[in-house]
Image (cartoon, rainbow, N blue to C red; front, side, top):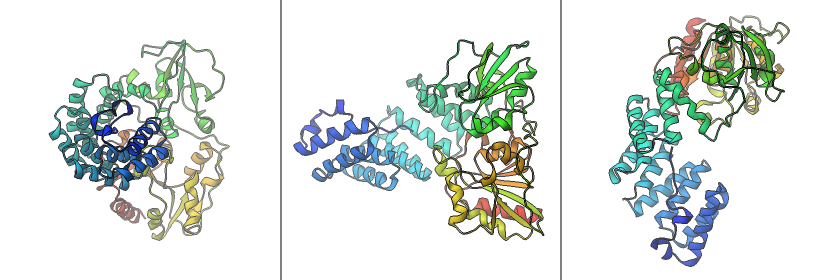
Length: 465
């Protein structure tokens, strides 16, 4: 989403700032400098100081709202925008910024109304059209959002963010040919750094025995999802070298068609061409019906893992994972916590096992549910161990995280709790996944509300028992 402070420092010499008391003006100018440098704590303190002198200045209020939103202080941010609008209801930037913070907290209909108000006030306010497109995309109104992205691109054809979000909308819609073409804009975003090699990028022509270097670029889930392409590239005549995260190396070394595997940071071998994993659907011109979907395509090594203890009377062994990586930009939507999963423990014959790794694994002890959920993940040193352990289970129930991809790649029955605004690869509405035949998707009907999702899962689990 596009947010901007009402005035940058270089724009702040207009008449309104000259009318501020000197102390307020100095505090505001210092705040803008800190804000522009990403020092939000200092910026908030200085904006607040300026407001203590000029409490109804709409520009300072709007700037403070933007800084607070950057700190995830969403209610305070909302109130700054609302006060700014109360003082100056004809400021389109304040309306659009309010729409952005409402989108962040899942109040999507209200967000749409705010962005429409901004556009009504300024028909040339392209950022407001873009922000409106993002909310419509969140709501699953993909055709409308794509039309708005196209409109914005007529005015800002080189915008990385608009092209990127348009690509995600196309992918969510199932238009993989055009979506993966636009997905290349990821290299121009701050989150990723493009790698450069003297060897050329593979263009999809027959490889005829050439050595091709494939490398991961994003998270564990992305690697598990797209490593299926190793065998596809091998069938295209390539001698495949794969670079992956060290935690995945022992698991993926058995991929069909793989000649050599490396961990990130290892010395590079000789090769002829190269490609990032997530560019392969574009290079191979795959549509939604032609992506490789045969599972399992991952087989853990025989020496990995350990035997899972199964209590007497167990009918179904169910692994659970309730949180993804906290630094993921959509983690506030996808991670849930352990408590909703505990409802499955009341089904006779079900034994729950924790597959949760990382800091959030401590929720098991925090909620004193050790007797309800048996620990498994703590004994797993890497993904190979986790995979071998998972194959001893009957079902995995998880949020959208690497565990979902691993279970799907193993061909294990897996139920995924999908947020209202999901990652593009889960698409919209459908309960199955084109990537994993063994996967069932349980979707939120309302942003932030998980009760219906877990009620549906519980009913299905009881029926299966």
